[in-house]
Amino acid sequence: MTVLGKVWILWASMLLGGCVLDLAGDLTLEPDGEDVSPPDAVDTADSVLPDGDEDPPFDTIPEDPVAEDPAPDPTDVVEEPDMPECDGPEMVYYVDRDSDGYGDIGSGIEWCAPPDGFVDNHDDCYDANGEAHPGQTLFFTTNRGDGSFDYDCDSVATMQFTQETACDWTRCSGEGWSEGIPECGVSANWRRCDWWVVWCDVVNTARTQACR
Ligand SMILES: [Ca+2]
Ligand SMILES: [Ca+2]
Image (tube, rainbow, N blue to C red):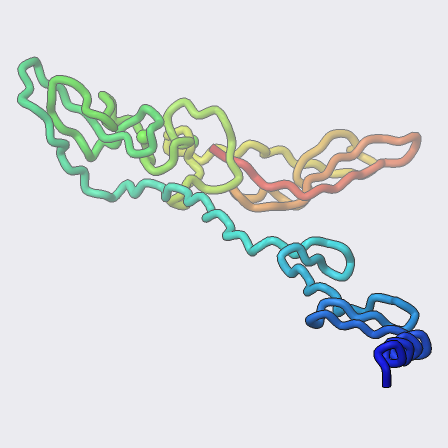
């Protein structure tokens, strides 16, 4: 066959069968010319969740809760602080564990100035609660730490609410405990009643006895 005949047969084959060209596997043309090359690999670095959210962040380590300082123990033995030689007149100073300005009578040391944590009085009646000290005017519904409600150091647990009341046709005005006066820190029914037209209107609420 002549060279001209071979060229004619090659042209006819390409015309009838379409063109499939595959160059080193990078490009494939289907008969209609559509590119069916394999898709690029998924970029996993920026992948998102099916709902469109970004990958959840790494678990964070929660912060440690702030530890509360324990209440001072009034029975701790007081160690005499390391102090330089005292070259002035000496006085007796007392440890103040709860920092309320009142010292523990059982903790006196002699020196010419109060060391840190010491005061010049021994008037605290409970040196493990800064709310318990002479002159306290507030009332409390929980004991100071040793079972006592004597917050003002007068050796008596004084109650805040001592009035009682009854609500009936003979007395319907005022407020007070309706079932006896509860002890310090104990809850009971507190009643208030007032006349409403011809009715004695009563309101009951729970209240805890506060003391100092
Ligand atoms: Ca004190
Ligand atoms: Ca008291």
